[in-house]
Length: 179
Image 1 (tube, one colour):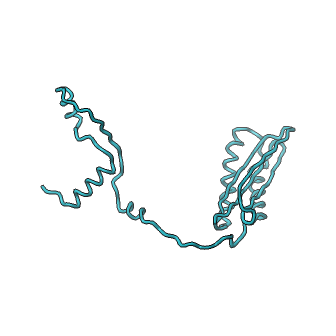
Image 2 (image 1 turned 180 degrees about the vertical axis):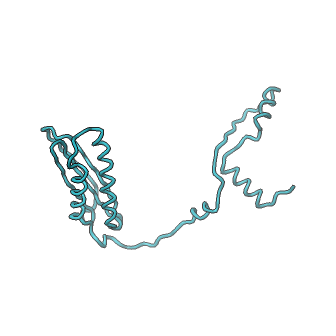
Image 3 (image 1 turned 180 degrees about the horizontal axis):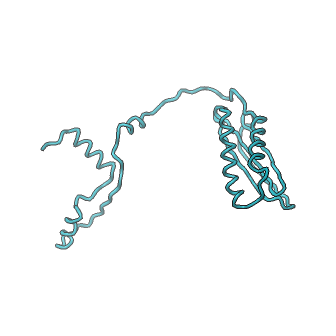
């Protein structure tokens, strides 16, 4: 039975993408090793899904035109984000006592909630970085510093500090404009 040219081409491309595959089956390998006729060769087997039509579509490159937009059409709403920070920190931490494991999970949860609420404002072309610190209030002081390299015309931040009887929380949202 003859294979068509297209079938041969697909089989050749498929074997090249998968890597080299040993042509000997397991039974043939043992038979050759027993009789002393082994070759000095290395065989590798790798796995790859069969190519599909979706792969061809995903390889198409989309060329975007320049927008020539050098600044944001709408500046980052610092006051609104400050209200979001206050609402989220107050609602999550108002009655909480400081427990290290709980606070570790709460920092992750609170930062995700803040990020989602700020993204809901749909401010285009800003990258958001949300950092939340939670610590125990125990008559100590702490200094938290951060540095960023940015354009002061377009980039900004929003910050809020929350305190209750046993813990403090600091939430920062950095908004960096993507040109």
